[in-house]
Amino acid sequence: QKEVEQNSGPLSVPEGAIASLNCTYSDRGSQSFFWYRQYSGKSPELIMSIYSNGDKEDGRFTAQLNKASQYVSLLIRDSQPSDSATYLCAVTKSGGSYIPTFGRGTSLIVHP
Amino acid sequence: NAGVTQTPKFQVLKTGQSMTLQCAQDMNHNSMYWYRQDPGMGLRLIYYSASEGTTDKGEVPNGYNVSRLNKREFSLRLESAAPSQTSVYFCASRDSGVSNEKLFFGSGTQLSVL
Image (tube, rainbow over all chains, first blue to last red; front, side, top):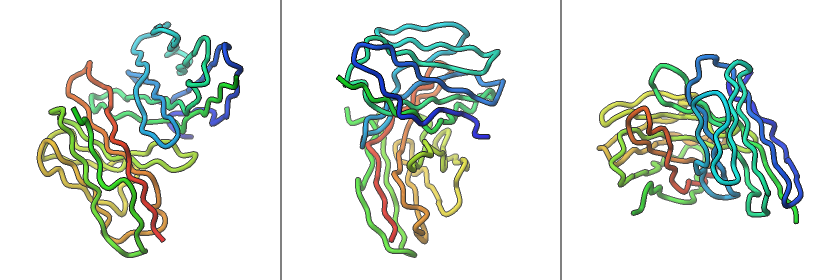
């Protein structure tokens, strides 16, 4: 079992809809959780980080963390075609090494 | 501000050839990383350097060596390239401290080994 699991997709949503991306992790001691966005042929860029249970909102993006169930999700409201990309979930283990482990990524397609 | 600079952007090698991928950051970051990305596999850590003078193996270190030349530069060397090393390679850096876990990535090197 990979340490960080994501559905590879593609997830296809219409413009204006809510896109929901999910990620599960295996290490119960994980401390920090991140969502990176990667456009085709480009490098990943951080869009959200979350450290405690609950929701964290930033513009159209909401990250949700549930440590008891070991999952983290990313909601994108009012999805736009420019949101079409691969979204990588990353998790940092406990122990202070700050080495993120990445999931395989979920491809999101927002169609007009 | 250039951020993280990787060279070259593209490279084609024959099996058995060697090469070094260069990475430099101008953000005074302590930690640097080399990842490879293969289709459907996400990013996998090859080596990392928590600070100048230290390096450690990641998830997939076999066939690679690294050098943390100074605080700015972290190079990745393939001594004898194999087709299985065909991939996109990303260098990344991070500032130190609990609140600084964001990785800054270079633009990547697309490597093909024939």
